[in-house]
Image 1: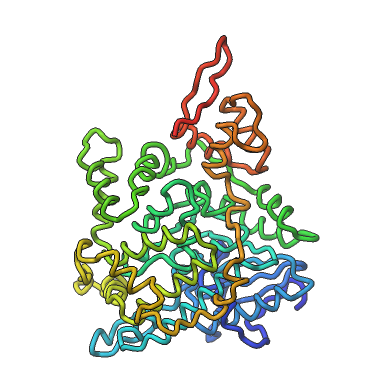
Image 2: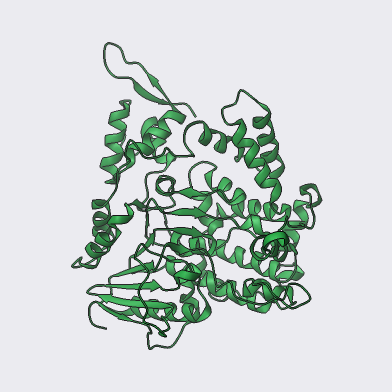
Length: 509
């Protein structure tokens, strides 16, 4: 394919494993014009010198992927990965959304709600046909895994909504670029399911208890928060994305290092008028404290304690969060927390294997809450839209032992003959990946520098300015001062030096 060409179709044998990739990509570009009576192709492909780009092209459906799109993208991604001329893969979308999920068109039988649309997965589960759902999750997870193992550097542009399955395509990218338009969430417990697409691997690797909080509540991160939390590796203003893409496509010989340097050139610093993070200071301290507990009951009890403390600065937040969790499926909350705790010690392949088992159990009826939640929240409209009737209704009616037996144990009757496919290959399951390679430094890394435990540390305690300078030198990243400032405000105290010198930092948590 010649440079700067756009093609609606790639002529190569479809490969379903690697095509679920684009179920979740969008971009800042405007909707491409379509001539009257012309059907726009659902995916566009472009070749620019050393780079290859796919563009999801269903903006009216929030770029949700259907199977033909998956096949088109998978085929192209595999072709590009093998090509000696492709040194960079870019995933974007046409419209305002990265991706809010998969195709939502599918009819339920008249025994349920024949006139309403629902995902094909839930449609078939409701009809007692789990096979399509099981196969869909298998192909999606295999694609997420394949993206994580790409040897070709991969850049995902998160310039819009990035929910659920879209997260799976993004978090596996070596480079994840957020903008002020980015909205990130994993809201699956709200619909009676659990955070998947590798979330059980990725979320526990965020600082503190943030991943558990996001996974159980479905809380949204917006704009710069997505970058500062580590979900995105870079932050660029939306209006500069076209220039960034032009810069990337013109790199003479793209490598991870010079791709990172190129994106850093476009970093947008925080401005005085920018809104503060909703997860800094006392709020973040409350999140880390409450969601560090090891059971759902203890988490909710801790929230109740904070809510009742009128003097606590996050009392109102605790009340809102408690109400959110009480509205979610008790079964899903139980499964999600167990998966996040297990995933912390797993590789991505192991975590996806676990999630495949959980998804299979849901598809085979281990809990009715998936169908119930999707129907109540995504199908019902107007007066018919209502509160889902979870089964069981209360957390105490969902013993952890029952959840483990049905969703995690290989002997479960719901987990027989699971089509794990490539995940059964030990060399792939144990393959290590590092999604944080180009992210802001973690709290633990900052703590090592403050405590003098980092390999580059000396015996001299650091001032705040010295810490910022050291972090910038070690990482080469822009935007570190805000992250360091927040960590220091929560985790350090300033100890005055003798004389007139500036106070040095002491780690206290």
